[in-house]
Image (cartoon, rainbow, N blue to C red):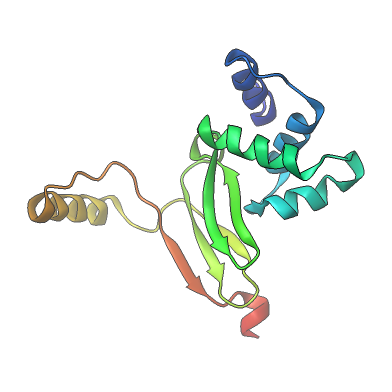
Length: 146
């Protein structure tokens, strides 16, 4: 069974993109991370590999355009990114308003019945068809609330 890193590498190659060292290093950092990362955080994790900031920005932009990455949340330290749901599964985020930590909330706390009712209501009121959703809950993490 191919790993997420292998799958992303194959996607890059299949679309004609070179598998450069910096590109593969950025993919590796994103695959290994348990939380969304800013470009600066990716750069710090790659410092020992001498990846320059321009290469990281270009790789993030490329992966966003391919649908491999998604923007998770904007913080004072900049936009943060994570692998798209096809690689991580459907989840939502808990965001600490003090330290800006983002934690994954695995699965969906909104039941199918809630989503169905909301979709029907939006279709009726606004002629809007829901195709996907994202939930972000803001508050204080365990460390900041104690």
